[in-house]
Length: 407
Image (cartoon, rainbow, N blue to C red; front, side, top):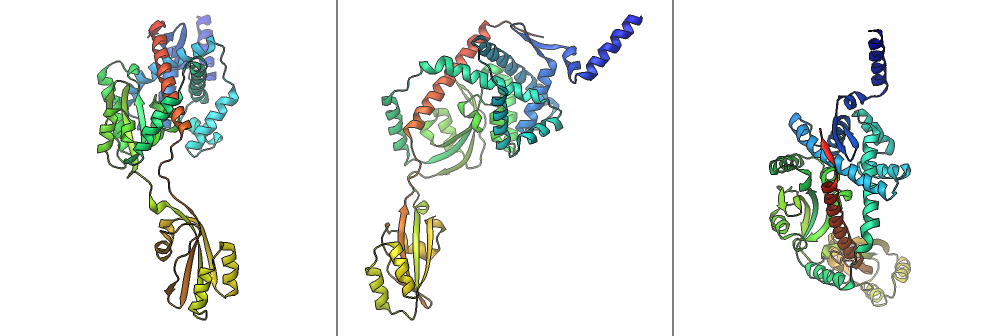
């Protein structure tokens, strides 16, 4: 009896000294190749998800998330086991750097994000474990598969030519979330969770935050941002949906062979360049009535450089103002109308306004080129897409070969 009381007291002291251990003792959620995932691990990760995604926590949503989170934790165990097998180690400084980046994306400091986690009763190590697995897996994937991917010049050129042709098409500023079908046990679970995510996104939940937590697309680290694209650059099913979307709209879940997509359309614009975004550096010279029109005409015909024109204008008692490079649409109406068709080094005809004669000189001009296309960026996109596919295939193989016991 005395021994039993001593053991009970020892257990109570142990639990008091180690927050969360009670949940560990209560049970094990899964065992992955002899490595344990505790129920406490699952609880903490669920709390982390709600805290960082902004999705409203409810008993129904929590239950849906538990299965999703547990499958994600199983994947992380498998990923870390692979990284350990090839002796990949992630330093604490690397994790801190990633935390600082996440903090900046949420307009916080590193200390701020740690305080935020503490306020939500989430252990700092919960976030660090997620980051460690992500960094280790990315390093493993690039080390093992990066050298196998060859992006040839003909392929880059083909994509470049398609992108150039698409410049005159309508452009869309799009973000994406890609849900991994492998992380769901039933189609009904996919339908319920994806539908709930869309409903909460439509209610104002942060799309980038949800993308960082949920999406398996290469864009997840950038909050799902695809940037400016034409509809033809997407999967035909996504392209069809995108063309029907309005600016500010969140799409319904879109099933594809690669997973379930959710799209957000931030903006769209007609193809080609936008003349209103052409930039002009305008020198405005305002001559008072005391300067005769003949002198003004001589001033215009004698124009050589803006610097010389400024000096000469001051000698003629004219006021001088230089805009610097500004978009046409931001210039005063009279100035914009006078210079819209002028090139750098050209002078608009003098114009009378009240008791002043204005002369507008274009010192410099830079035209809007529309969406800039980079061959390097195209090559990077092709590489990212291919390595992402290879990583997902390898993870499926790991799941197939692993010994995973769910409790």
